[in-house]
Length: 506
Ligand SMILES: Nc1ncnc2c1ncn2[C@@H]1O[C@H](COP(=O)(O)OP(=O)(O)O)[C@@H](O)[C@H]1O
Ligand SMILES: [Mg+2]
Image 1: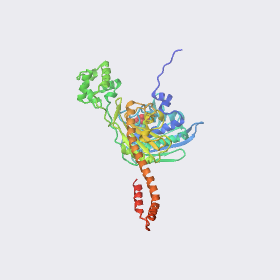
Image 2 (image 1 turned 60 degrees about the vertical axis):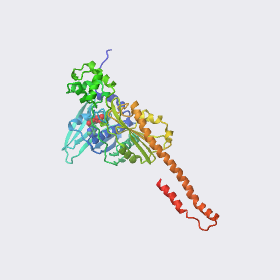
Image 3 (image 1 turned 180 degrees about the vertical axis):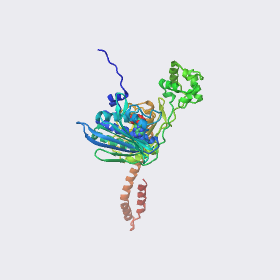
Image 4 (image 1 turned 45 degrees about the horizontal axis):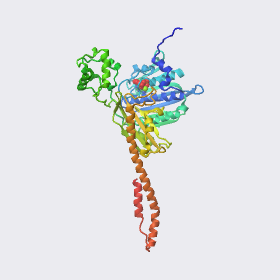
């Protein structure tokens, strides 16, 4: 029998392989759907420098078999809104998005939100509703489905409303199969950690039982937004190089390198061309395929390119990280540390670490680990994550830390390209450069924790000593008075007062 060959669309691919995007089973699917929409909303608000207000509602619609129920999910935000002409594709076409630029964002593939809608469609066969306005005089309302085989949106209905109140934002509503009761703890944990790492956001969640979860912002200050950047020579491959050649307006190699690559100036460009033996006056469009391959190889070998700067990144910063931790964990002590920008394979990244002690942090015989990437909490596959491997490899006794202590360790990695292992964005691959930064960050924070623990131990010891002192001092005074044959005991109050003063100060 002859073989048959066939092409499938990107939607069709993700329809067949929903596991790799995090839609494995009804519990996981409902968690992923909420998460993808919330992340889109956070991106949309931050893009225009507005503190996010996000409202999430999950409503029970009916039973759908033994393991799953049907829910309606609605997420509303005060973000940028979407220009009307892009609404259908943004939600009805996989791999369509506005985040393919070289700067830090939560979304990366033009996949998450659309995947949630696609999952909703294949499990409930209902269209999705999208309402959005960029703050103009109009609000656009679309009812749409995804043509999975063609990877195109199918518009079922479109309405235009007058925007009298100058509302700006997006509402996405659709139904999907899920298992809320198995997913509940993960969803609530996700929202809590999102609130922690975005302390300038308001999150409201109404769950199917009508329970209200509210996470309120403690600040309106937001991290400096990331700037778009050019590719760094160490991260460039032949494909990128060829695309640049196709679009470049430049006519010689010096200008070509200066215009299209990150941190390459005239001097570096000249040195590099000398190193790779390509004439500076050469027209980039006349480069042969061999020459391009050669140039890309030489780029990896040339040692004098400056490291990428970090303006395309938007770390949280020590103050906001601390604010988030104080708000959600209320610890007795917290140490935060931000590492200097570093790179792996030409991609810049920054690691932020915090260690917190006490407060709401549980004593569970092991550390509580919070992992974040580009201000997204990562909740699954903890054991495979590079941070967890680093934490397990450390000798904690050196820092006076024992597993029974109420300790939380937070690791935030931000990058233009977070080294995720999967498109489900769950854990960070073990890259040596990333591992080193995580390790150094944790060590730095751990040293602060050690100082705190040492001091606490000392204070406790002193306190115990002084309380014994306070108990026996009046008796000793009495004895000494009798021994000395005096009638009036000395005034011990003065001494006791200094004991109490010490206690108050510590
Ligand atoms: N709440 C929203 N507000 C504004 N734009 C949005 C919102 N949700 C999605 N978008 C737009 O739709 C695109 C596709 O979203 P999505 O499928 O989640 O992919 P990604 O976030 O990876 O780009 C985004 O790039 C963005 O431009
Ligand atoms: Mg997204």
